[in-house]
Length: 88
Image (cartoon, rainbow, N blue to C red; front, side, top):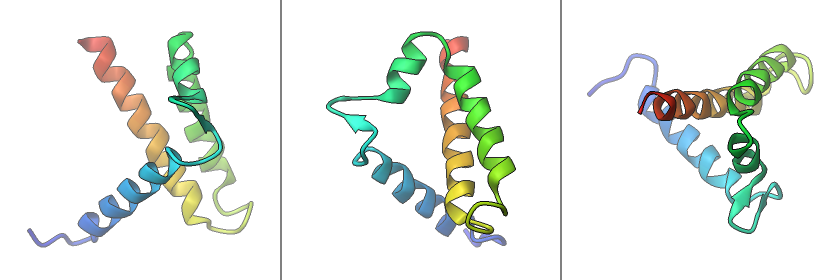
């Protein structure tokens, strides 16, 4: 498929970013802090709050930082996961 907006490359970048988050400091042992937040029932607010946080920060802290956009997408994926699991 020929993508007009390089979606295939961008999705690959998103996958690489998400994969790296499992190796970073906030992944302690087999649980991430996000796991605990989701388990306590605060997942939707946490995900939406972080989407808003990084959207508001984009263009301010560090300029138009690509990492902020990747974080918005990652928290959007978590929100989608929560929506899917709520409807199952």
